[in-house]
Image (cartoon, rainbow, N blue to C red; front, side, top):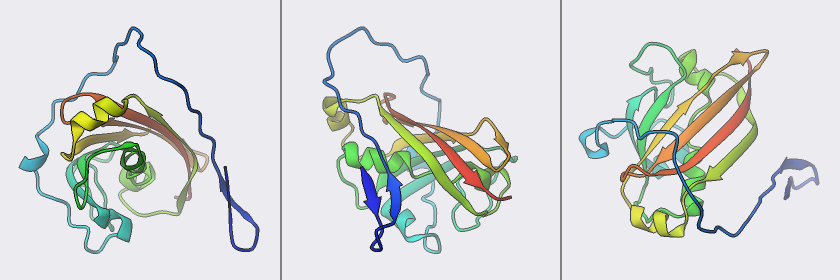
Length: 180
Protein backbone atom coordinates (compact mmCIF):
# COMPACT_ATOMS: atom_id res chain seq x y z
CA UNK A 1 0.00 0.00 0.00
CA UNK A 2 1.21 3.49 -0.74
CA UNK A 3 -0.18 6.73 0.65
CA UNK A 4 0.39 9.78 -1.57
CA UNK A 5 0.27 13.46 -0.60
CA UNK A 6 -1.95 15.76 -2.68
CA UNK A 7 1.12 16.77 -4.73
CA UNK A 8 1.87 13.16 -5.68
CA UNK A 9 4.70 12.67 -3.20
CA UNK A 10 4.80 9.34 -1.36
CA UNK A 11 4.00 9.90 2.33
CA UNK A 12 4.21 6.32 3.58
CA UNK A 13 4.12 2.72 2.49
CA UNK A 14 2.72 -0.36 4.20
CA UNK A 15 2.52 -4.10 3.73
CA UNK A 16 -0.13 -6.43 5.09
CA UNK A 17 0.05 -10.21 5.22
CA UNK A 18 -3.11 -12.24 5.67
CA UNK A 19 -3.47 -15.95 6.32
CA UNK A 20 -6.07 -18.46 7.38
CA UNK A 21 -5.71 -19.35 11.03
CA UNK A 22 -5.89 -23.03 11.82
CA UNK A 23 -5.91 -24.99 15.03
CA UNK A 24 -2.38 -25.89 16.17
CA UNK A 25 -0.48 -26.38 19.38
CA UNK A 26 -0.11 -23.08 21.20
CA UNK A 27 1.75 -21.57 24.12
CA UNK A 28 2.48 -18.05 25.36
CA UNK A 29 6.05 -17.58 26.59
CA UNK A 30 5.24 -14.29 28.33
CA UNK A 31 3.30 -14.15 31.58
CA UNK A 32 0.58 -11.65 32.33
CA UNK A 33 2.12 -9.03 34.63
CA UNK A 34 0.57 -8.56 38.05
CA UNK A 35 -0.91 -5.04 37.85
CA UNK A 36 -3.58 -3.03 39.65
CA UNK A 37 -6.98 -3.27 37.90
CA UNK A 38 -7.82 -0.42 35.52
CA UNK A 39 -10.77 0.99 37.42
CA UNK A 40 -8.70 1.37 40.63
CA UNK A 41 -6.47 3.91 38.84
CA UNK A 42 -7.10 7.56 38.00
CA UNK A 43 -7.71 8.44 34.37
CA UNK A 44 -4.89 10.49 32.81
CA UNK A 45 -5.73 14.13 32.09
CA UNK A 46 -5.38 14.52 28.32
CA UNK A 47 -7.08 17.93 28.08
CA UNK A 48 -3.83 19.65 26.99
CA UNK A 49 -2.38 16.70 25.11
CA UNK A 50 -2.60 16.01 21.37
CA UNK A 51 -6.15 15.46 20.11
CA UNK A 52 -5.72 11.71 19.45
CA UNK A 53 -5.10 11.05 23.17
CA UNK A 54 -8.63 12.25 23.95
CA UNK A 55 -9.98 9.24 22.05
CA UNK A 56 -8.79 7.00 24.89
CA UNK A 57 -9.36 6.47 28.58
CA UNK A 58 -5.76 5.91 29.75
CA UNK A 59 -5.00 4.79 33.29
CA UNK A 60 -1.25 5.01 33.91
CA UNK A 61 0.74 2.59 36.01
CA UNK A 62 4.20 3.77 34.94
CA UNK A 63 5.85 6.07 32.43
CA UNK A 64 2.84 7.60 30.68
CA UNK A 65 3.97 10.97 29.39
CA UNK A 66 1.26 13.22 28.01
CA UNK A 67 1.85 16.86 27.04
CA UNK A 68 5.09 17.19 29.00
CA UNK A 69 3.70 15.77 32.25
CA UNK A 70 6.60 14.09 33.99
CA UNK A 71 6.39 10.37 34.66
CA UNK A 72 6.53 9.52 38.37
CA UNK A 73 9.34 6.97 38.22
CA UNK A 74 13.08 6.60 37.79
CA UNK A 75 14.06 7.26 34.19
CA UNK A 76 13.78 4.20 32.04
CA UNK A 77 11.88 3.62 28.83
CA UNK A 78 9.03 1.54 30.27
CA UNK A 79 5.39 2.56 29.94
CA UNK A 80 2.52 0.59 31.50
CA UNK A 81 -1.10 1.67 31.25
CA UNK A 82 -4.64 0.41 30.93
CA UNK A 83 -6.31 1.82 27.84
CA UNK A 84 -9.83 1.80 26.42
CA UNK A 85 -11.49 3.54 23.48
CA UNK A 86 -13.47 6.63 24.49
CA UNK A 87 -16.35 6.33 24.00
CA UNK A 88 -16.06 2.64 24.88
CA UNK A 89 -16.73 0.17 22.09
CA UNK A 90 -16.12 -3.55 21.70
CA UNK A 91 -12.49 -4.30 20.87
CA UNK A 92 -11.90 -5.26 17.23
CA UNK A 93 -8.83 -5.47 15.02
CA UNK A 94 -9.05 -1.82 14.01
CA UNK A 95 -9.04 -0.51 17.57
CA UNK A 96 -6.40 -3.08 18.60
CA UNK A 97 -4.19 -1.80 15.76
CA UNK A 98 -4.60 1.79 16.97
CA UNK A 99 -3.89 0.81 20.58
CA UNK A 100 -0.65 -0.88 19.47
CA UNK A 101 0.42 2.56 18.20
CA UNK A 102 -0.79 4.55 21.23
CA UNK A 103 2.59 4.70 22.99
CA UNK A 104 4.68 7.86 22.73
CA UNK A 105 8.23 7.38 21.46
CA UNK A 106 10.41 5.78 24.12
CA UNK A 107 12.85 8.72 23.94
CA UNK A 108 10.13 10.93 25.49
CA UNK A 109 9.86 8.62 28.49
CA UNK A 110 13.57 7.83 28.86
CA UNK A 111 14.72 11.47 28.73
CA UNK A 112 11.51 12.85 30.28
CA UNK A 113 10.78 15.40 27.56
CA UNK A 114 9.53 15.89 24.02
CA UNK A 115 12.01 15.56 21.18
CA UNK A 116 11.73 15.44 17.39
CA UNK A 117 10.95 11.78 16.65
CA UNK A 118 9.18 9.67 14.07
CA UNK A 119 8.39 6.06 13.35
CA UNK A 120 10.60 4.46 10.70
CA UNK A 121 9.05 1.00 10.87
CA UNK A 122 6.12 -0.44 12.81
CA UNK A 123 5.11 -4.08 12.72
CA UNK A 124 2.07 -5.35 14.61
CA UNK A 125 1.42 -9.03 15.28
CA UNK A 126 -2.08 -10.16 16.23
CA UNK A 127 -2.16 -13.11 18.64
CA UNK A 128 -5.94 -12.98 19.03
CA UNK A 129 -8.63 -14.16 16.70
CA UNK A 130 -12.11 -12.70 16.31
CA UNK A 131 -13.53 -15.01 18.98
CA UNK A 132 -10.98 -13.90 21.58
CA UNK A 133 -11.50 -10.22 20.74
CA UNK A 134 -15.25 -10.62 21.14
CA UNK A 135 -14.78 -11.99 24.68
CA UNK A 136 -12.87 -8.79 25.56
CA UNK A 137 -15.82 -6.52 24.88
CA UNK A 138 -15.35 -2.92 26.04
CA UNK A 139 -13.13 -3.14 29.18
CA UNK A 140 -9.63 -1.65 29.27
CA UNK A 141 -6.66 -3.60 27.90
CA UNK A 142 -3.18 -3.49 29.41
CA UNK A 143 -0.43 -1.90 27.32
CA UNK A 144 3.26 -2.33 28.07
CA UNK A 145 6.13 -0.81 26.07
CA UNK A 146 9.90 -0.75 26.48
CA UNK A 147 13.06 -0.04 24.53
CA UNK A 148 16.30 -1.96 24.52
CA UNK A 149 18.71 0.47 22.83
CA UNK A 150 19.05 4.18 22.12
CA UNK A 151 21.83 5.48 19.91
CA UNK A 152 22.94 7.05 16.65
CA UNK A 153 19.57 8.78 16.37
CA UNK A 154 17.40 5.67 16.65
CA UNK A 155 15.70 3.51 19.24
CA UNK A 156 13.60 0.39 19.19
CA UNK A 157 10.30 -0.24 20.93
CA UNK A 158 8.58 -3.48 21.83
CA UNK A 159 4.99 -3.44 23.06
CA UNK A 160 2.46 -5.94 24.39
CA UNK A 161 -1.31 -5.59 24.60
CA UNK A 162 -3.09 -7.89 27.10
CA UNK A 163 -6.80 -8.47 27.64
CA UNK A 164 -8.31 -7.90 31.05
CA UNK A 165 -8.66 -11.70 31.09
CA UNK A 166 -4.85 -12.08 30.92
CA UNK A 167 -4.68 -13.11 27.25
CA UNK A 168 -1.93 -11.73 25.01
CA UNK A 169 -3.81 -9.97 22.19
CA UNK A 170 -1.00 -8.38 20.17
CA UNK A 171 2.63 -7.37 20.15
CA UNK A 172 4.32 -4.66 18.12
CA UNK A 173 7.86 -3.65 17.30
CA UNK A 174 9.08 -0.28 16.10
CA UNK A 175 12.21 1.51 15.03
CA UNK A 176 12.05 5.23 15.77
CA UNK A 177 14.22 8.13 14.60
CA UNK A 178 14.95 10.86 17.19
CA UNK A 179 17.02 13.99 17.83
CA UNK A 180 18.06 14.38 21.46
